[in-house]
Length: 123
Image (cartoon, rainbow, N blue to C red; front, side, top):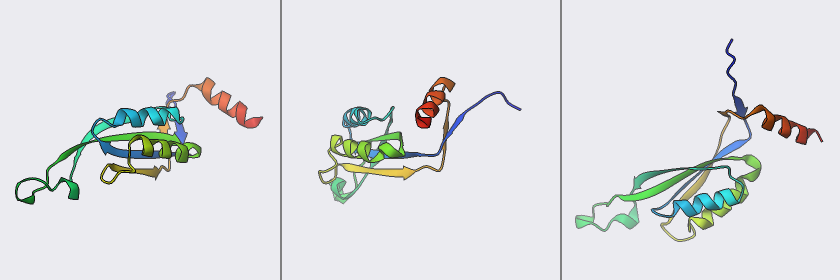
């Protein structure tokens, strides 16, 4: 039997937000201000109706920033809304944001933090 430990989280969701280049920092800051613990930013390419401007109507690849953040289910709505407006997704063609409910996720959480959470819930 292994002495290594990990904690399984069952009440979490993954928020994924795809935005125009240079918007990710503002989206991450808004998520953290709303209670998210962190986020991952990576880059991708996308195409769509708005990018059909090249020669002969060929689609032009456009760079996007993709932000993912693992958040507690009770914080999803608040963080989702803040990320939406920070990414200026209320403008046509600006990007998309969506939530994926996770069955489980695993990470290391120090015992003292787990104990403080358990103590808080018992009160």
